[in-house]
Length: 153
Image (cartoon, rainbow, N blue to C red; front, side):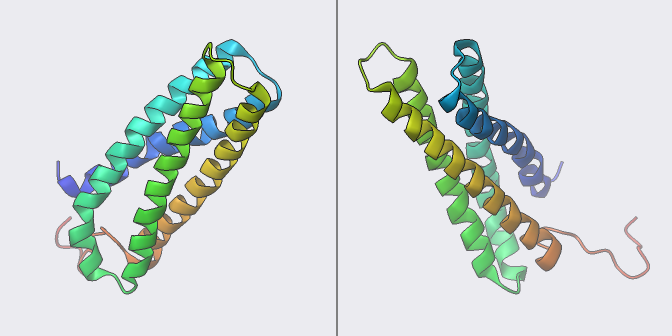
């Protein structure tokens, strides 16, 4: 298995996990359910692990892909926003830990922070996905273009 295929393989699970977690964070900020909150934390942890793995595999590809792009600034923005996405959802996890802990924290403030970080995380996730799709479909990043007679197939 070529290392070039690792980034597309590792990116789709965190997209699903973090999107669902962000939406659940918004919902649970207004209508709290303890068992659903624990499920959300599980999604969040799995999504964050997958996000870190996706960033790692994306960094491996960066050196090869950046040389063949018409506009490499899109790749840099894709990478930067992937890190912002990781930080936003890490903050969301910290806010959840505060909300579910035994500490005497003002629950309404933490709920607002959970809602805001969930919304920001979903928005950032959509933008990172848009940039990634732009790289692949507009600039053929990481795509092997076959010859005219498709000899390699």
